[in-house]
Image 1 (cartoon, protein in one colour):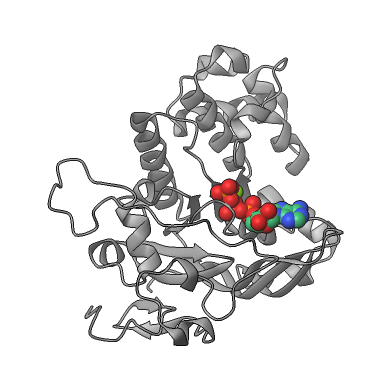
Image 2 (spheres, rainbow, N blue to C red):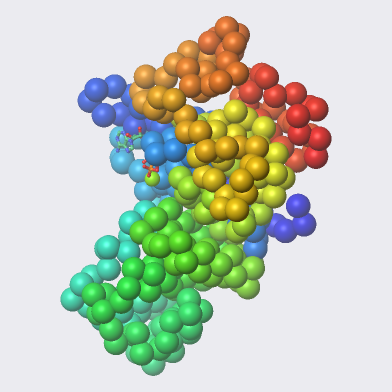
Length: 328
Ligand SMILES: Nc1ncnc2c1ncn2[C@@H]1O[C@H](COP(=O)(O)OP(=O)(O)OP(=O)(O)O)[C@@H](O)[C@H]1O
Ligand SMILES: [Mg+2]
């Protein structure tokens, strides 16, 4: 990859420890994001997407245990002291949280809410410089400057989501992590927000990780895609290639769940998957997907292969996918 890597996850695992017993929600994830690159992570509810994001800025519960390395511009987040973590949050990496558009302060004007992190991170900021930055941020997310005077209830869902993105950009982070940034929006709103995010990543040479349970949302906006199942990445590769030729049976099923309008001859016809994803505290033996997999064999009940290279730029965790399936 020509661009420099701004976020790299190496063999990252996170286990929650509720009283009922350990919940290994993320297991050995390897993933990287380059400057100006948009990487998508997709998977069903509960597969560990938000947990994965929480590792980047150490936003997980105190008693959770983590393993591996999360490097932001080469610096391991897990090894940072707390004052360094505080500077890295917003400054180096920022998160647009799942459902965050509902967390804007209802009794504070948008401009004031956008200015707050500017004052926290830039001790030299003045009222005038912060107001100028707020205007620039609103412009970047496609909103008129007058919205600085609005209260959240005066904005639509899509406009509020744009404000959340502007908030995350206040301190010019190198990496932006977006957790389901479009769930609350209609189809047009979703397309506009994703377009906006992609444009921001390119303009600012910012690395962007976009999480969604809806694979179709990521289709035309990501450079690379990782598919998660039961805390693991089970397939990853170049987005266009992965969508053209999904290799893992789970990816195929996920794609089948999102029919393309006008594509009556799709090979991945809407089908849905039998059963539910497993609870990470009680995983099946072998490949976690085998109880729901249409091509599972006896071997799959005991073998858990992890990601294997398939073709030039694809990795797939399935013993039944061979080199010929994806001749990229
Ligand atoms: N604080 C916690 N303590 C114990 N278990 C947790 C905690 N937070 C999440 N989990 C469990 O970890 C697993 C992964 O949760 P996570 O929120 O990362 O999923 P997700 O992929 O983001 O799902 P969704 O698409 O619904 O947002 C789930 O089984 C969840 O119940
Ligand atoms: Mg989530």
